[in-house]
Image (cartoon, rainbow, N blue to C red):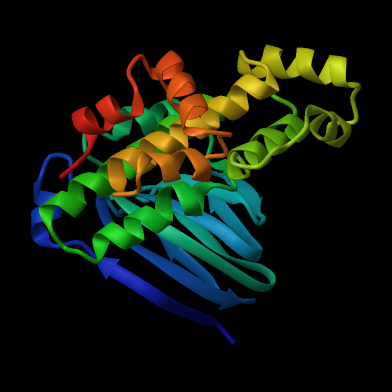
Length: 273
């Protein structure tokens, strides 16, 4: 049996894709099981697809990929592609994007000119898809801007962590840190997961990411705080708690040291209304 049920699919209004930064064309959720597969080519969009459970596969540009939970692929749908359930069930969420000039430089940089397609990014649902899904239902211009900002922010984050020559265990650890940014995760636990001493883990982490594990976690918290300041009405006190800071004063000081302005000023300057 070849089953594919799109539980939730929302297409953007005409105003979205006519606008120069109207990036999102649709988002949705797929619940499938083997032997489901889908083939496409010559479609002028980009596709972000994230595996939420089970295992899938992707055939793209002459390469075969196995898709596990936490994996997201980014492909140009003009190229031939085939993807589907690898074994038993495969569930996923997806976002289709217009190939606007504003998004293509990010796509080219992340995928090395289209030569790479698969990345491990456990926070995709929370950082990108949930926001797009929420905004797309409103069908207004303000939501279009917010949806576009969410996608661009995800692409920037992926570009930040998509360093070359990083061992798989470190990529998974950094992905785990981004997903659990608001928790108190000790360096000892991370070092143990990497099968290294604490000293060697910190040294290698800084080599790969340009910051210590603590600095990286703080950047993750600040990044998520920016999203909340821009896209929600959540109070700054609540944002400090949500993002794992010990107090409002600690959050404000850390935010200003990182961004250059305090959270209140940032919200005034960048909030989409």
